[in-house]
Length: 179
Image 1 (cartoon, rainbow, N blue to C red):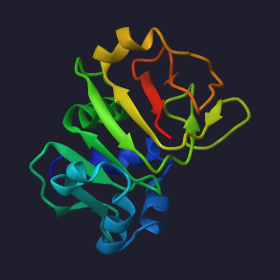
Image 2 (image 1 turned 180 degrees about the vertical axis):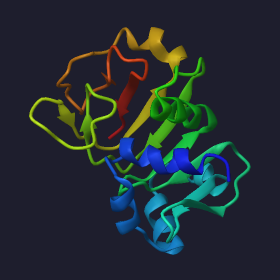
Image 3 (image 1 turned 90 degrees about the vertical axis):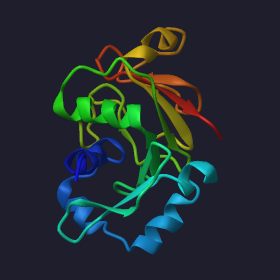
């Protein structure tokens, strides 16, 4: 299945999840659907492709969608991303160039925290400016760079206000708290 590896790797961004942790965090399809119900607007979730972790550690489709959105819960961080955002996540994971597209991600249940300066940090350390953001949406992709110039680019941002995550990297993106 396409993007299976990408979706598993996306977990390290959306909640600092290793493959071993992701396998440990497996949940039933019904549990996943319950967790996703507040991650994005209902109309997005209703027609999205829904992915869940299989017992083999690979992502599996549990609902085939038709609206261009993919929803999952990598490591207790339920989220829904549009096609361009999934391409951005694949570029980030492969250390390739950010696509020249604008992508959008809903994380209305918040996240587990991530380094605000190191796109590849997987654990909180004293020097990586770890930040945990509550309910938010993200605007990603190289086409978002011009928009981001008006927002704070601090290493230690206030996660209750809009800010740029991973500033100065090819994967910088806009974090917009919504609650």
